[in-house]
Amino acid sequence: LALASLVVLSACGTPSFDDPALSDRELNLEEFFDGDLVAYGQFQDVLGTVRRRFEVTIAGDWDGERLRLVEDFTYEDGATEQRVWTLVKTGPDTWEGTAPGVIGIATGREDGDRFFWTYTIDLPVPAADGTVTTFRATFEDWMWLVDERVMLNKAVMSKFGIRLGEVTLAFTKL
Image 1 (cartoon, rainbow, N blue to C red):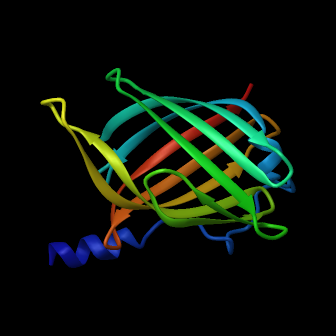
Image 2 (cartoon, rainbow, N blue to C red):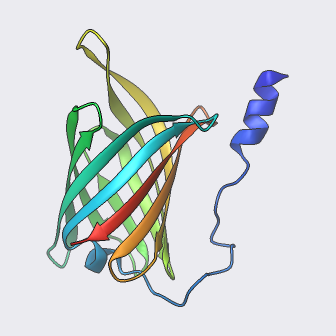
């Protein structure tokens, strides 16, 4: 019964392109992420408990064909991590991307002021003894352009289709 309830809850509350648009802004991913940005975020487990907070500095570079994002994470506990994304625009509103740890190809779609991005990744997980293991999870990221300098991001993290928690981020273009 508990497992069935968790599966039902894991399908609730996800955004959709069928949701009404809240603005007439048009997100241009390559413009927004070209240059320097900073983001502040946190991970909350499925019960809503905040488990980890972080800051990310992002150096973005759009060369007309690919968007490269160098993300430097600093966690509240002092741990650091770097992730380098390479994104390619595959159509007027579609994207594909790769990064170390990402399994296969990440795919995304822009629509108005929104961007939906999904991928599976092996995340490094530090242990108390200093060792690092990996944890494979699937992310479904929704991003909303607030204005020319700010974008909000809500990412649902799951494993085997069961929601494990959410990452909330606020990006600011510097």
